[in-house]
Length: 158
Image (cartoon, rainbow, N blue to C red; front, side, top):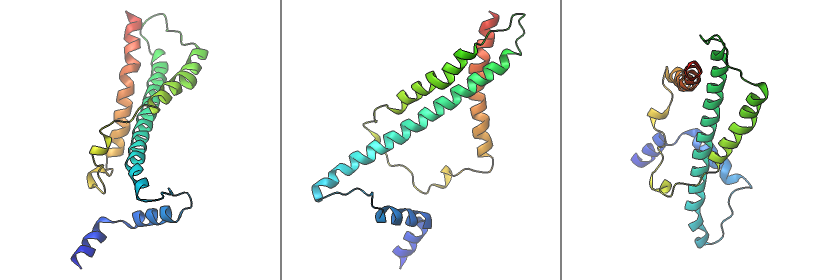
């Protein structure tokens, strides 16, 4: 009875629903024979690498777009007599072509060979957003984008 109680504490009903839906789905991996399960660590490692690379690519594109947007807004607040010229076509090409291409190259990066040696945390209470953590994330993103937006203004003055 003690083992069942500990299992109930560590397993959430959403996890049970997810595992049930995966196991009943028709698109589950169809592995034949015991030797085919040897590919599962490779599949999991590739999945972890893809998730990590996609997350960093989205973070890069988002922060670069925010920095460029703040640069455009701050260009009007310049103290110099000549305002910097920001061409519209160059802005469109940067935001719609160059940034996504750089993000795609980040998303296609190779997997870390040590990725299967570290176990991701599960049901860790410290990974859940706290009361003001969402505000801190947005404020941190804003401040990360602010420095690349201010530096070109200072370089323009020089």
